[in-house]
View 1 (spheres, helix red, strand yellow):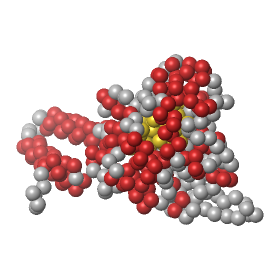
View 2 (cartoon, rainbow, N blue to C red; view 1 turned 135 degrees about the horizontal axis):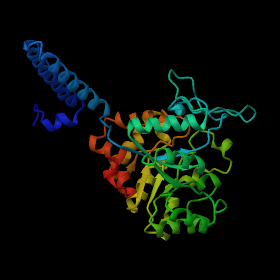
View 3 (cartoon, helix red, strand yellow; view 1 turned 180 degrees about the vertical axis):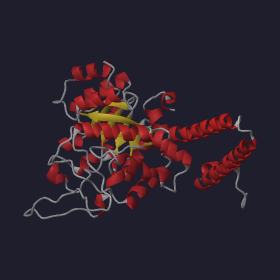
View 4 (cartoon, rainbow, N blue to C red; view 1 turned 30 degrees about the horizontal axis):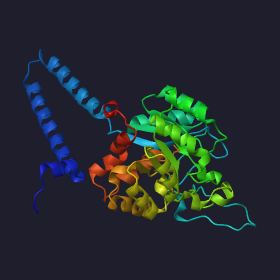
Length: 371
C-alpha cells in the first residue's frame, strides 16, 4: 500500500535498517540510564558489585558488535601467483575508462594506471600477499576459489583451509597428461577445474586437444571455469600475441558442451563484451553460469553495470557469481564487493545470490560450513 512501510521493508531497506538500529541504540541507553540510576541509589556496600556487573554487560555488548560476522561471500576467481616485482605496481580501478593506445614506432603503452587519489597497493612479496589477502578475507568473510602456482596455493590453503577452495588450471595438453590431470583431481586437494584459458593459446574452447580433460571433469562431477571474452587490458596483441578476440565468443563453447552434456561450466568474465551470445548460450544450456571477474574493476563503471543489468533483465540472476580475478592487490576484494553492494537495480536477495547462494549451488557446497 502506498504511504505505508512494513517491518519487513524496513529490515531489507538500508534506511530501514538504520532506523531500526537507532531505535535499538536509544533503547539500549535508556536501559543503561535506568541501571545507572539504580546504581546511584545503592549503598556503598553494594555499589562495587553493581558497577562490576554494569562494566561486564557493557564489555559483552561491545564485543558482540565487533565479532558479528559479515554474511559470507564466495569469490570464484582468484589467482594464486608468485609476486613478480616487475609486475607489482599499484593500480587504479576502472583504469580502462580511458583505453590506452599508441603507435608501433613508440614504446608499448602501460595499461596500469596509478595516478588516481587512492590506488590499490600491490603486495611486494609472497608473504605480504598471503598475510594481507587472508586477513582481508577473514575480515570480509570471503571464501576464494583459487588457482595458479601450486606452492602458493598450498601455502594459502595450509594457512586458511576454510577460506581456500583449490582449483586446477590447464589451457593446453602440453601442461599435463590426461592421467596426471585425473590423478590430481581424485587425490582430494583440487575441487575445481580452472582457469582454462585456451583463448590465450590461439585455441577455441571446443578444440579437441582439450576434450579428454573436459571428459574427466564431467565424469568426476568437477565444475569447470573457462576464460571467455576480453583480454582485459586494451593491448592483448602486444602482451599475448596468440590471443584472438574472436576466440572469446561464448558460442564457441557449444560443440564442447554438446559432447559433454553433463558438464557444469562457468564462463569467466561473463563473456564480456559479447552479451547477446552469452544470453543465448545460457538460455540453451542449463548448466552454464558466469562470473563477473576482471571487468568488474577494469572497465568503466557505467559499462560494468549495463552488462550486469542486462544479464539480470534476461532472467539469469540465479546464475551470476561474484569474482574478482584478483592477482596482487589484496584491497581489490573490497573494491569489487562495493560494485555489487552499490548496484541500486539489484534487490538484497539478488545481491546475496551473486555473492553467495549461486556459488553454493554451482559448486555443491555445504552452506552450513560458511554461516
